[in-house]
Structure formats: structure tokens, C-alpha cells
Length: 111
Length: 115
Image 1 (tube, chains in turn brown, cyan):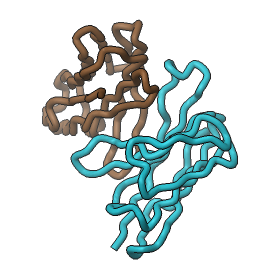
Image 2 (cartoon, helix red, strand yellow):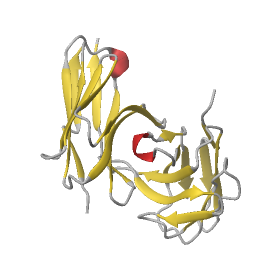
Image 3 (cartoon, chains in turn cyan, brown):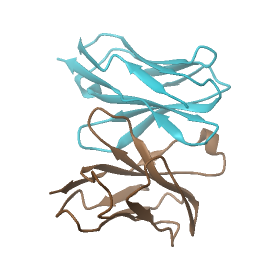
Image 4 (cartoon, chains in turn yellow, blue):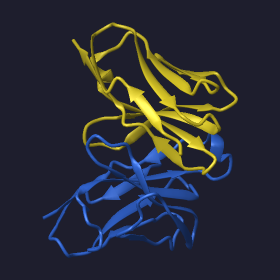
């Protein structure tokens, strides 16, 4: 059974810092990995999707990498801003074609 | 703008009552999903549907029911059989064609409180 773990559960950084969020998964037989952002009381917003054949994807200040063989993904946020404060979730899509979600990392960027 | 609309945003019900949560999308997506989110837990899949008039149970379907009579709509009924219905409910949709390269789109959720 696929399990997705995100460490740390919470992270607080000063504005301007570059940071890395981690995601690990137990079954490397995946179709894709997705990173989402969730603001309090809101739904999830898709940030990046990495297909299993890809190594990374970039969107603006965000860069996500995927190492399928080791079961790891990282989300790199450059020059963090207070508006980046949110919970970040990763999810993997495996053989069952269902997305399995991690519990998220709550990020606080302090001005 | 295309998107997913969930209504209402907040819902309060007495124990023993059934309640239906609405989800409508205008993204022309074939697949629709219902997730439940509880504090400190990841999202858990309740039901999903990949085509009109067909749906499958997810990981925690007990006490819930759905219908998919139209492509745009996927309502979720929380029945009195659901033991812990108080939660944040999220509806999502995605394409079926090129599905491994199609991200999930979410609505803004409905917070259900049952007392």
C-alpha cells in the first residue's frame, strides 16, 4: 500500500530565504507526482505535476524534482515571500490510478 | 473562468439527518472525485466517477452515497450511517484522456458540522 510522508510537518522561515520541502513515497511504481498548495479554509491549488519519466518541473520561483528510484521528491521555493505561507501537499498517482496524499507541510514566511 | 463550485461553504446538521453537498464543474472534465480532510490527516478518497452514470467507491465510502447523472455534477450525500461526518469535504475533477499528465482541480470545499 502506497504511503506518502512529508517532513517537516511545519516550517517557519524569514522572508527571502530559499527553502526545500520534502516528500517521500514507499512504492516507486507511480504515474506522476503532484504538488499542491492549500490556504486556510480553502481547496487545493495545483502547483506542479511531474510525470514518472521526468526529473523536474519548474514554474516561476518553484522547482520540483523527482527521484522515483529512491521514492523522493523535493519542492524548492526560491526567495520566499509572506504570500507563500500556506500548507503544501504532495500526492502520488500509482497503479490504482488514485492519488495518495501526504499530510502536508505548513509553511510560514515571516516578513 | 472555468472552475469547480462547491456549495454551501458551511453546513450545519443535526445527528441522524442526511445531507447533500453540491459540486458543479465547467471544466469539461470527465472524472470527478470526493475527498474528506480531517485535521492532521491527509486527504482520503470517498468516491470517484470517470464517466456519467458510473462511479466507484474510494477508501472510505461507508456512510456516503453519490450520483453522476450529468457530466458537470457530482453530488455527495452524507447519510446518518456515517459515524463521524463532521469534516471538510473537497470535490475535485480531472481529464480522463491524457490522465497521467492531467492535474487534479479542486473546489473550495464545504465544511460540514454535525451536532
